[in-house]
Image (cartoon, rainbow, N blue to C red; front, side, top):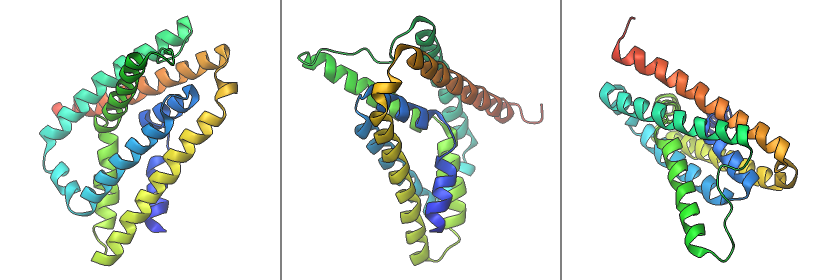
Length: 210
């Protein structure tokens, strides 16, 4: 229960990962696949954090800088794309003809790559899983630590699948042009706010005390 509660506390706040899961659910483009990728990524990071990964990240500021700079660049471009669609109208991913298997395959891989980038280029993911969950769970005894990790992973499962399924259920209403413009505006603003926060952190990492 402690692992589940703390896992929910770190995963529920709005961030690029949650926004993308919601957006793909609304568009009904591989929402369960995206939720599965998020879950698997969290499971790997939580497991690593439980067994010393947080110490590795804390001891490697260069690695954290590289991840932060990459995340700023990616989220800035993604936010620009979403804001442009909010202005012009349209969807983040072009709909393809059901018979066009090649185009559909490319769309799937584009979505997968985008989700992996949003997840693995976001330093907040490492801080939440490796540092926060890892530091708390790492203090527990071996058996309790494993159950703590299971609880945190269960929180990811419930949240990501719930968000994907709920978004897909509401898709007919949320896919209206006016609402979709508002959603893309929301996506773009969130991505840029996170990018700005990461940029500030990167500045502090490169030039501490300024």
